Every structure is written in structure tokens, then in C-alpha cells.
Length: 111
Length: 120
Length: 311
Image (spheres, rainbow over the protein chains, first blue to last red):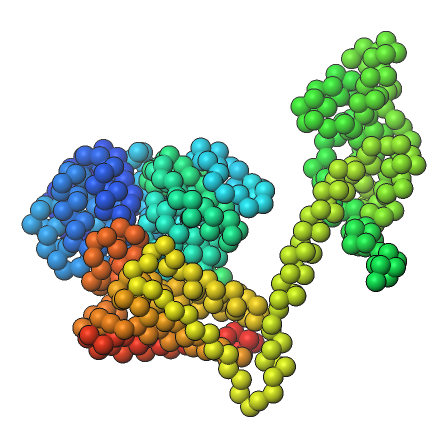
């Protein structure tokens, strides 16, 4: 499934990487501890998190994740947004919480 | 959803069961690794899914009125965390499923999230 | 003392007068119809691991069939295709759902039955079934609950504000907090919470105080060498003062912003320091002030009004 389809189905707000929404999503990963995401997420995963610190971009790049969904309607710090744009990382915002976002992704077939 | 159904769906291990709570009804769930966020939005009596296993998870549960905590991604708490949970009468479970999959499976089986419960 | 205790009814005796059948009976009853076969009886007894099944015809209880009936049927050479109505016990002794447990105790021995179907006194419809095991389980559960309530009652200190005479009484609890100690971080709030329970505050008030105090305690543990929580308990409000000895917050305004944090990575990995602590304290309290001087320390003050006053 493409990021674009997920954005549409979950009604996400895209705040960075609009031009890379054709990227393929291979699965989902949810977590707020950066060390855990570094250790356990897989290439192509869509990452669901509460974290808005700019380190999330570095983590997503190093693990080649397809994109980041920030939950609970939180707005990322300025540095995070700047870095996301530089690094061509799609970042989306959902007003729902991790449980609901992961639930919906799972429902539409992201595993 | 009954607690024993949740245990079955997540193939969870029971680390601490104060009384026999398997018949207890759980009405909603929440998943997060950051405790301040849990404190900010979790509702009393929700199931907490978390990858954090420190004693502060138990204090977070106690202070916010959570009775059942399930550790995800195969993480096991220290002895101190389990002992503290016993003292505070909080049920602890552990599943090998990652957070994403745990939320997905429970959600698919009809357990709603904290933000989907209308404010009383 | 001893003779007095002897005369006093035991707790269990008291409970048998207090508890009603409907409080301990099993409500999900498997039933059969008169034209079911003894084979159905065998299947249900085995699958459900029960010892007797009420037989219902047109909403009316017409009999009960038990393991004994099944064995007698076999011993008498009856096949498993025999109809239930020919093998069941017809004059069923029932009890009412509003009977007290004490009325049943003798019945089990006197009549030699292992179980009684329970019917509603008015409609005479079957509403449950009760065994000796259900009664024992019910008594044990009630004992446990009573014990727990008694414990809280014994320790209850909610009358303290009425017992002491003054124009304005305030209880003060002080808790010392050691910086950097993640093993015990949260313990002090837990003690404060217990005191509030004993003082009889409403759960919602306690929840708000506990969450805000826990965040204040975590801040002291994460950022400072040491500090203390001072809780002042008034009948109508709880005020908490969290004071530490440094290093102080350079930009208080920024620190109040949701998501703003100066926490090092290792703190974030412990699930804290994501810039939600102070906003949480603000949200859960009714009033909050924060004063800080770099190199001197921080003084955080918040107030939570108890709900009692609004009612």
C-alpha cells in the first residue's frame, strides 16, 4: 500500500514530504522509545509515535522507514519539521491516539 | 471485552494476577511508552499497553486508575516492578506481540481506544 | 471475654442471614426439554462438568435430571435413547431467589440433594441453580469484601477535620525526594495518595492530585539533586509545593510549552522528559504558579479544589 492511500483512508494531515507519498509501506511499527524503534522496526515500516523531538527523523532515516505518523494531534518542533524536509521524510499528523491509529492501519491491511 | 479474552488474543503471559481477575470487563485500551502522555489522556479502568517496564509504569497505573497493564514486544519487567504491582493490586501481563500488532489485534476484535470513549 | 465471644454469632453465621440465594446462585443455567434423551444428558454433564440439569416445559420447571438419574437409568437397563421425562426426578424441591442462605443450609442435609433449582417467588420461573459450592464461594467472596471495607474503615481518618477544633485546620505532609533515583521515583506520591484515600477525598480529586504530584516528583528526580513535596490538606482544597535545590529553569515560559523539553536522551528512554510533565500539572490542577532561579532552584505550587464543595 502507498502512503497516499493511508493518508486518504485515515484522514491524516501531511506536514512534510508531500512529494514522496507514492512510497510503498511494508508494515507498521508503533513506539515512543527511540532505542526500541532503532532496534526493532523494519525497512519500509510506517512509524506511529507520540514523539515530536527532532531525533525521530534521524531514527526514521537510519532504519529506512517509509514515513512517520505523529499521534494525538501534536505539532512537531520546528527543528523536526526542518530536518524532515531536508531528509525527504513524509511526516503526517493524526488526531487519534496510537491505539486507534495502529488499529485502523491494521484494519486496512498494514501488518 | 473480558480480560481472559484479551489474554487469549495477545497470547499473553500473566505476570501478576492479584485476585482472579480473568472475568473482569475491560472497556477500552491505550498504548504508549511515554508515561506523561499516558497520564495526560488515559481514562480510569482502561487497559494500558506499553513497552516500558520500569516501576514508574506501576505508579502511573496507580495514579491514573488503571487496573491492568500489558507489556508488549516481549519485554519483561524487573522483580521490583512485579512486586510493586502486587502491592498496588495491579494486574500485569506480557505479550511477545509488538505494540502495533497488539493494538491492531485488540482493535480488530472490537476493543475501542480511550479517545473513542465519549466524555462522561 | 471468652464467654462473650462465644455467644456472639460468628461472621459467617451473620452472613448466612444476610446473603440471599440470588447473590450466590449460578445464573446461566443449562436446561433440557422433556423429550430430550438421556444421551443429551450424558453429553451436557460431561461437557459442562455439572451434576444436574433442570427440565423445562413451556417455561415451567417440570423436573431435574442428575448424574444419579443417569446411572440408575443405565443400571435398570434403560438405553441412552430413553426420554428425559421418564427418568427425571419429578417432585423437584426448589428454593426462592430471595430466600436467605441460612434457610438452605438445613435443606441440603435434610433432603439429601446436591443442588436446588432457584425460582422467582412471583412468576415461579426458573432463574438459577444453586449448589453447596456456590454458597461457599459466595460466603468467601463476601468475607473478603467485608474484610477489605473493614480495613479501610478502621484506618479511616476522614473525621479528623470534625474532631479537631479550630477556625481553620490544615494538615501538612512533607516528603523528601532524592534526585536521580529512578528505582523509588513515584513512591512519595503513592504515600500521599494513600493518605488522601484515608482522609476520605473523592476518587476524582485524588486522581488529579496524584497525577500532578507524580509529575512534580518525577521532575525533581529527573532534573535536580534533591527536593521535597509539601502537601497542605484543607477540607476544601489540596495545595502542593514542590521545591528543589537547583539547577533552575532558564526559560519558564518555554518550559510550560507542550512538547518542550531539555531532558537528556536517557531520560526519554525511561518514558519521561517528553515535555508533557508541566503541561499535565497545569491541566490537572486548578491553580498553578512556577518560579525558578538558575543555580538556585525551582518552586512549583499548585492547588486542587476538592469536589465536595461544588456539590
